[in-house]
Length: 124
Image: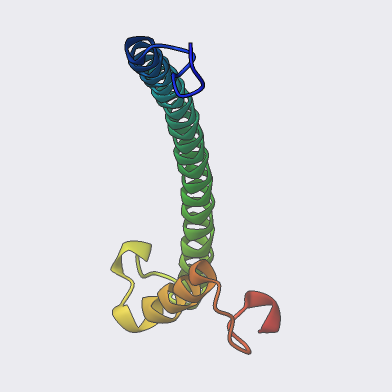
């Protein structure tokens, strides 16, 4: 062999390069599969978390509805008692709109969290 001749014949160099490319492709395919698997795990965790958040939000809404319904019932009973006392003889089912409007407005303010001076029963 002379100094000008390569150590490996050209076919061995080409074959070696092709093997390196094939090996790199296998590593890349393996990496893609691992990334897909990891993405699926992340997606499943996010879906589980979103279901938990939705379930908790529904629980909180149900509690809020129960509280609002209870408060509405209390407010209406208080108003009916007051109407019975002031209209002795009139049936509670015949309340006029003018008498019911302040109660409904006060309840709406209370349920929306808006408080105006004098709008709370303690302020009266």
